[in-house]
Length: 211
Image (cartoon, rainbow, N blue to C red; front, side, top):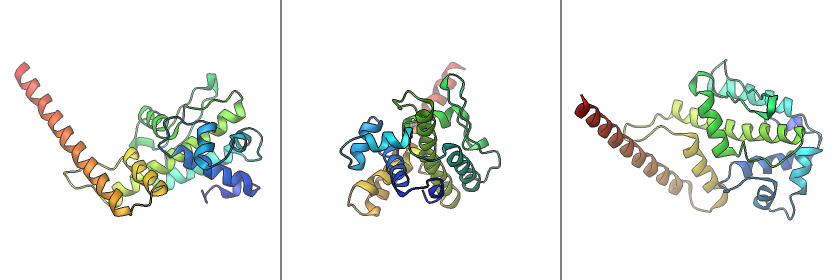
């Protein structure tokens, strides 16, 4: 959040934006201003609604900061974020060649509430999408950094955005030590790797029988 802090002229909207992004990164089953406000400890959703509709900050500047962050962290000059205003359709391209547009779009919807907005005005929608992509950009950059600097051993799947979100949520909401959450992450990734290997073996056996 320090990267975009200067885009907010006052402390209050800056704090609200941080709460908003942390809520989007949480494991809430549904994400809207009501649930995000409750997650932040607010008594009403009015503060977050004000952030989306009337607070003074420029979503386009935050989007540009996000694009620069993606280029730096993903080491890809083609990294971009594009929001298509036609029929409020969203086209997301955060990781350039590293991930496809469709995969990134689906991941942003599932992990950061990209499509769970309940707003009626362009400004509120545009700001929601920008902050959702900021949340997903954090997960994508953290995942890429871990894969580049700490490659997974053969018995584990690669560290995904979804797996990054698990320990992040746990570390910000529980008092258990980081080693506990890391151990569960390793267990899940090993289990998923074994399941994938078994699936590929069954596919190969099926193909051999057909041929």
